[in-house]
Length: 109
Length: 118
Image (cartoon, rainbow over all chains, first blue to last red; front, side):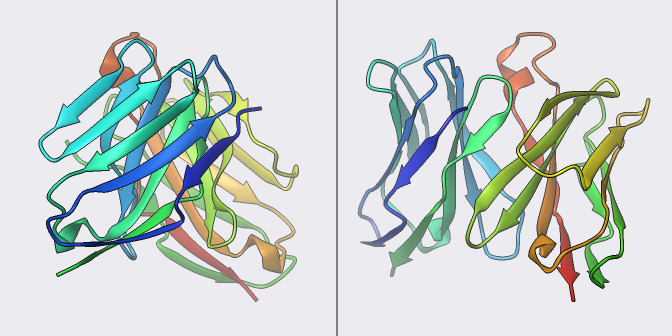
């Protein structure tokens, strides 16, 4: 089956700096790659996603890049704010979803 | 549209008992997936139902089962509870890729049911 690895497991940045979270996947047939943000005690929320026919997608301060050849995709958050502090999960999907183990992001004011 | 809802939100059970959790998807969504979330294992896929049929299944023992009704609401049942079953159980709904459109891939989570087994 699919195996998704996510790095780093924890990340601290100063407010205003950028944050990058990286994921790799093993199944070349995976064709959909969402990112979720989960605040403490809340449900995971879809923040951005990318399909395998696209290399990059941007939504305001958040962007995702996909390298199908290398089988990795990354989440980029620019101009970080304290409210960006949360656990971020990547996932890869062909049929079912396989999730990474999460990155705890702390934005220091 | 109303979001995904799950009931109950919290549950305390004793080892050996069984439990049933419920999930109501977003209106129009035909796919419901169930996940177990624990601090050590992250989000683990249990199974997916689409139009009342189990479409995908994760690597969980047969004690974990589910079903989906004609209105797309889904239930998950865990029999003979073990201490290790203590977790947050999340369901997520989507259109289920039926149309092939970009939005049909998007999966939205419910608030979860916190199960504690003592």
